[in-house]
Image 1: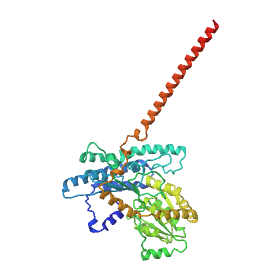
Image 2: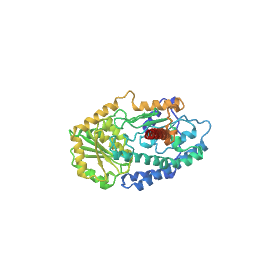
Image 3: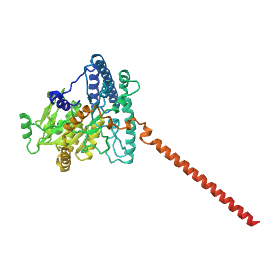
Image 4: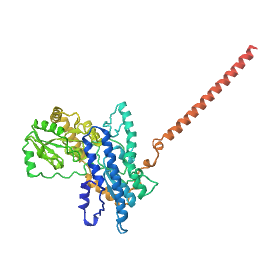
Length: 470
């Protein structure tokens, strides 16, 4: 669960606070997670898909351990009101909610699988399906590929993400249901999306967009950081961060960044991985390496000129909110990052670089182009003004909906019937088949009647001619 929601829950008055119960992960869960993270830098898909499968399998075992813990340790006096879970790719929260027979809500990144689970219509003609990286303006062949991505994603969604949890569902809940059906019954979908970045699409009433809910009022920087920012002069400062998961990069790629940064007049703040050794790199004088940065506070600073990032959801929305243009470095594997990048480039918030083909010269040219072209800053600042102009702050909206679910013991009236319908009914294939068949029968009968009438008329005319000839 995102820390911002937890902190907000714990900051509420004592009588309103909720109680949390947990169980330890199985030993394989953490190892599988770390193995999956290491594949972010790989080009090949085979190992990464295997790492994802290992992670999901380990998560399903942890889910079984959690339900076993509750079955053996929970007393009748303990009562829970709601399950709030994240990430959506590991749906133990929904399974737990069904086991406890209480409502659930998920905080999720709106990739195809979970837009589909929430029952949102997905018009593949103009909405790009992850991991295509397309925009809403697609060519014919891109629409063909997008349709194939839709079909493949449905398969992966069911067989790779959810089916490993079915054993736990059948063991602790019922043999007559599945993980996919349980996830579809989630009461509230808190979507980390905003249409300043996301392509427009229809949504269900229990889907609430709360992008940038983790943004708070920027705080003053520490003295050393403020001095570093002010010492940059007119050129300003560039923030470089590839997120918490992908912070530890190979030396070969780190060297490309170091060489490019050394040739810039701007100062650079480099957010390193927590396990990185600052002494192992020879940083140029204009680069300040840090293992943790107050990213929101830095992006809000007037000296911040550019954000080099990997297209992560939180970072990209923070950058848009504060009106900072971007250079987006795409990694080999991550549909979310690739889709976010495609959207940001399409809207004119920055430019994209592929890390597998990136060179020092390409990186330097891209940075200089974004910094020297006014349109990037104008576009992202306009989007930031729109994004911040909301009647209710996203975090307050998030908390209102969570409390609304608890207050009314779930929101079944907002769930769509779409997920209960077979594929052929949802797309009206049976209705289309019926109408086509009916039309074919009517046309066929009409043709046969016309041919019969024509033949009768011809026969009558022939008889009349025969009489005259006699």
